[in-house]
Image 1: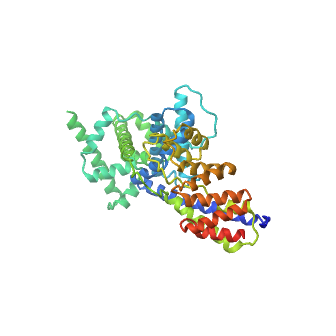
Image 2: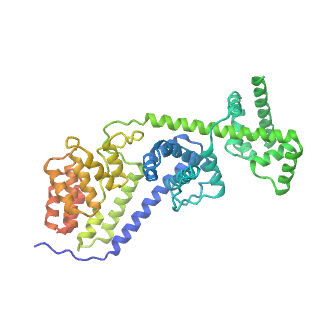
Image 3: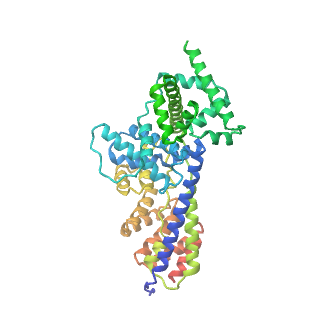
Length: 214
Length: 242
């Protein structure tokens, strides 16, 4: 005969389960925090990691909405760009969800926009709550049709500028750093020096455009 | 505040309401000022769009290069590995602090059962829809078990590697359908499947869940003799069952 199973206090198991879930959540959030910090530093490798980690799952998750795969792939790429841009402006610093939830929420937001644009029925589901700023970024990325002729010319001439010029203009216009911060981090003597450097660079850029245009 | 500073303040988002009014006013009345603001805004938009273009081409490159080595035994994400460690620590402390001589098969099962990772068919991201097996293991990884069985039905007999039985059994265990899991595991072990040690472990757990302590202990003894997989855990569980 074998001993009959006896009931034991289930409290222990519950404590254990709660403890494990807590630890696992902590680890996932820690990894997310690290990735967000890297994205903030414009670390494209971190973005690659996010891409590789979630692409399959994202496509699988979104396949329930019956959309062509290439549309979903575009949306996934756009959602990653939103993640990258919002990380840089500090929007993800106090992220309450996981990075995955944010990424998938962004994708869903874009997909529903895709449905609305195509006059298709939009599923009534709870979605991630983005603030107005985040919604603007999502819509901006989603609607980005690429550079127009003039913008392409601007970029081409921008790339001909010297390294120092490209740096200060990128920090200011692309990364949204304030002149004070740029002065500190880039070692300018004072804010006025940084300011006149920026003005000189803009002037050079205009000259380049005028020269190549004429 | 001079015009240049107004523009800088505008981009830095640091203008006071009064300065913002002055800024708006100049936009309407001063054509040079308006042109300068427009130029800088255009530069900002262009740099942003250019960066997005670069990122997208980086993603496309990734999509093409994602071919991974064919055989890869263990493909755990770092956090999954960390989570396993956390689970071990958790279990360890549980055994240390709350160990009790009594046992309950349901609880022992719950404490020991975790679904087995997909180690036989790594998902090659990028060509995920490449073939049925890849689709099946994608379904397995996201726990879409209906999909797994639907796809399994589409495989021909020659395509059916025996490890499909093993993974199907793990799915049945998760669905709490041990009547179906047990024969699959037994068949797999009898055919000397590559993962037979793993299968024996799950067989022991399935019997345990069914309250079939004798069979469970038999499987545990077999597993301990194999000296490969979960030997210590099996010994511990066997001790608990005795």
